[in-house]
Length: 452
Image 1: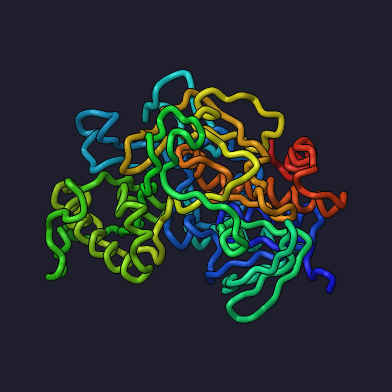
Image 2: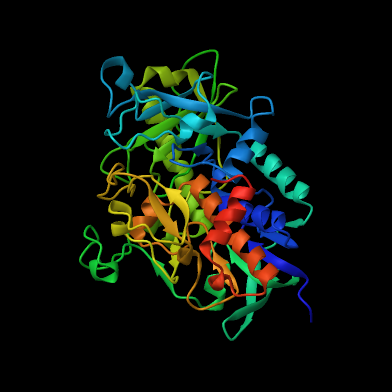
């Protein structure tokens, strides 16, 4: 049976969007399968709708931003207003960090990291906040305009057919079969179902020789957050708690900090750092995790309103429908990005993306700012060991746990997806395995599509 598609991308988050868009633009007949009814994953369903400052946001992220900014109140550029750790006096009077819109800043300011000085919120560095629905709408428009991508909502992949080093087909819960020459896994489902080697939790020091890794491997995962949104009210007040929720923190030694970002319409998007540990989330069923995280959010919101009077001018509008997950599992690839690659970048010839966020394990011992400059992500980090016609992108790609704590921001995941989708399309064009493609081919095609 001839494949129905050239490329099938599984997972419609940031990486999946980047992969499907790049593959289609490079000439491949592409299908993007997403189990939810909304694209964007963490960025939309989980409400992680802020793009933090990065050293490169070119290509698909910038194009998506330019689309969103045409819509009324859809997005904006933020800067730091208050920060309890880096500022003093009134500028520190906040439960964590407040991000406010600044119309004088441009998208380029979100890429202007200064590596010569320690992090300072007064540096002219900003980020992007956007409405989740605008992300979904604009991403769909871009995919449709490619002319070669079909988007399949509500397609949960439950089975994979594979032979000797090749995926041949996958099946959805509804019984649909999708065949393709090449597959891009952007959520880890194909890799898990096909039996790829998976890594989870902190790696031992011996695993990758990382100086800051623990002596023994642990099950510790980066913390997860239940994002919530609050909206202004005419009469300031502290919202009452339900009778079954105590006013004190029961899940940690103390209440965590919070990042609150202003939407263009005046609402605040709130990120408590974090709502539960990654291991705790893994141990709970989805329904139980959502119920428990809601209790924690309501308790936390009552706490910050009580302690910071400026937040009494808002009420809880809603909690997002999914947990914001920073780390789950990772696929063993031809190369695993390590802490050493971040601290002293070796200049690999197959670099396909430049990253620069600090080591950032919420609830663990590593803080942001550990690295000293940008570093490259090798193409081999997208190539699973077990299969020749499948690539992986997103947070499941070839990273150590420490490296993943840095290389996990949404725009970077979109760029890794772009590289994977480009590789799949070019492999089809030249009739070779993706691993046989020179990295410069990918970089050239990325530049043709708007990357650097």
